[in-house]
Length: 359
Image (cartoon, rainbow, N blue to C red; front, side):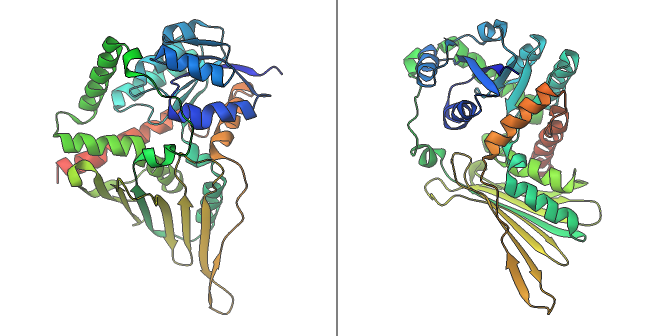
């Protein structure tokens, strides 16, 4: 079978750090035929770097090209281009967040269903071998009593400094398109959570853009929560804590905080039952070749506490999700991270904010 012809819209950090290098590794599965960026010069530079034959500054030109699939990793919101990509008959991979509001989600899902093509959310942590091992452990344990998410974020510039990235020249960016994107983002956030103060908008952005990783992983383990018990927002929207309630009485305590110049990034998922504790630790998403780790604490046959650290397969979650995208297209399968299920995560982000507004 010939490689799938693919185009990428958005030539920034996530494309350069992960998608383009990984697609080059998977050249038997994908052939990157075209790049698009709002900065035509950046699109050209990155295309030359990765030997992509065509580039453009107009996403409409890319969608009109003879391509099987597209990856959307441009600046949010992605709704307009996602809907247009499905209308053009493409298979579509949408980097998180797929959108901000439920209305946007419904438009994207309707477009995907009308097209009958694959729509996959870029939820890479679900494809992490360590997460899969944690999920198996959680399924085999007794009732889950408590889950804790601990996400200490830091400025992404610290991580990106390790890579040689091409960046857009502000003078090359079309002012009208920049303003259109800004206005569309503001409208989408307003549609999602209404007119709110700037600190709440900031918190919403961090939930949708960063903590969304923790929330979709949580949903895979625990399902959709019964209710939001409480939410606290502080530090001008750079700190968020929420408590979620689940059927059977389980609770999840989840916190995300930005510590701008603390470079020791920490993101953990802890699942506790009566007979064991699972601790999953992730590296930053802007890393290559660094594995997530898993520790399982139990008692041995004599009642002594033991900690086991299963070996984790040495394969990138980003590579695995691309391979899965290929399988879904070529074998007509539903993705493990379909867009209609990603809608639950959009709803949860909105509900977490509403729990604070209505406290």
